[in-house]
Length: 309
Ligand code: NAP
Ligand code: GLV
Image (cartoon, rainbow, N blue to C red; front, side, top):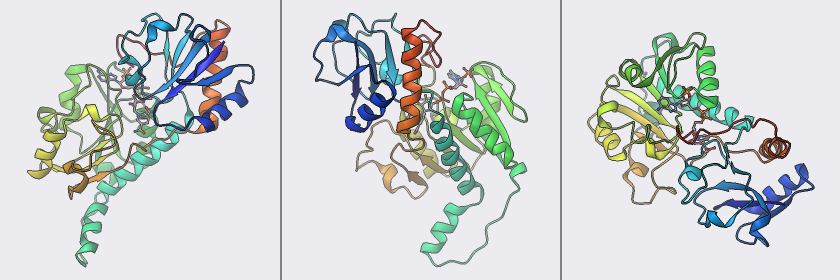
């Protein structure tokens, strides 16, 4: 039996080596070089896989090489009974906390203004606000949103969170569901999107919702490009309602060279690197999933295909 590695634009060799170290008895093949489709038990996926899924009769699980599973849920003819497992790699949390803290602090302490001032040789002091008087709203309080919320609490910020279901996190003002969204948005001066991309969250940061943020708010998107309507964001950046945006993810990746976001003075662009998967810890997490699957043990990080995450 085998695992097929089908991760678009990701060099296979380091992954095959790391996985083979954890799973010496499992044959690992790199798509499309698969000897016998009947033998494939696990598909490790990233990006758009264009295989005919009806030709894998013994597939046991779809494994995502990332926390997000939107690429797997979007596959044509995906057999609905086969479980989808997202990556539970702890290094994703570390990377995301670093990305979120860096960008929150940059906006909170006006470093984007100092960068501009330096280019104009201007020596001007910007006001300094106490973190307890700065509200940061996390959209999504899952594995990544929760660690980011706690890191921001430790720095003294006024932290709000929004999730699908109600929950309690110490010192975080949690809002939930459609009825909680307005209250959450109207009080968040810096918003951080850490939602999964689902039919309910697609385009959630559209003009209507972005306008609910307090004037001059900042937007950080480290989730998926499909959460933001780029043209709406550009309009609100230009009219001043949004003070700045730090964007790591985009509707189209790589971000096309002609996209206006690249050169917008209030936008920073990073190439989908907020939290990169770590080879060793991810290979361990994947091997644990395979062990559980083969031994009939409950799977961690299993996805609810109806909710889409
Ligand atoms: P997660 O553990 O599944 O958490 C998802 C959170 O979103 C949960 O709090 C969930 O609410 C909330 N949510 C889902 N649907 C919602 C809805 N309709 N309304 C309100 N809240 C909703 O996911 P995660 O591991 O934190 O990852 C989040 C996303 O980050 C991933 O899906 C991926 O797209 C992205 N990501 C990006 C990078 C990068 O480098 N840019 C790296 C890793 C991940 P409940 O708590 O009520 O379930
Ligand atoms: C990265 O985007 C991930 O989903 O892990």
